[in-house]
Amino acid sequence: MIDQTKKYRTRDGKEVRVYATDGAVPYSVHGATLNDGEWVVFTWTAGGEYAAGSSNKRDIIEVREKLTVSGWVNLYRLPRGISMGHVYHTKEEACLARAGIDTTACVHVTVEYEEGGGL
Image (cartoon, rainbow, N blue to C red; front, side, top):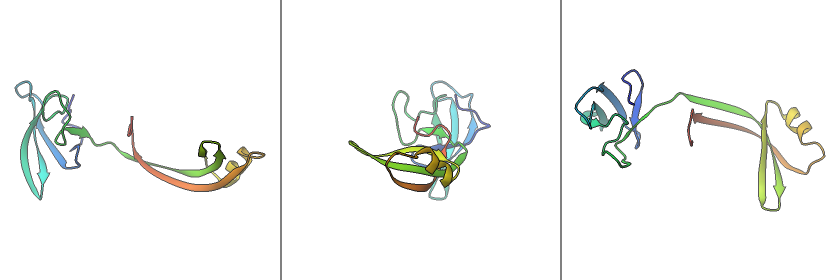
């Protein structure tokens, strides 16, 4: 269900303003998207669909907080290719965790993601 207190964007990344969520069914959500500097009025279903029952670039999805994780990761060679290990806070922790195993490299990584992304 779309909630007016949350922030949304379209699937193709346009900013969204939600004005009301109690309109006539099936398009009970009323709002607008920012297109080339102008706000254009749209309606959506309670689940954020632009076209009921199908996926569309104009569907709205919740904007979630961006999170960042960084640390040290061991890379090691397997018969099926290169694989990564766990993320460790320090290079020393990563090296100790892989002691005795043929590590190809130990690299520092930083990844930014949205909560729930990819699920």
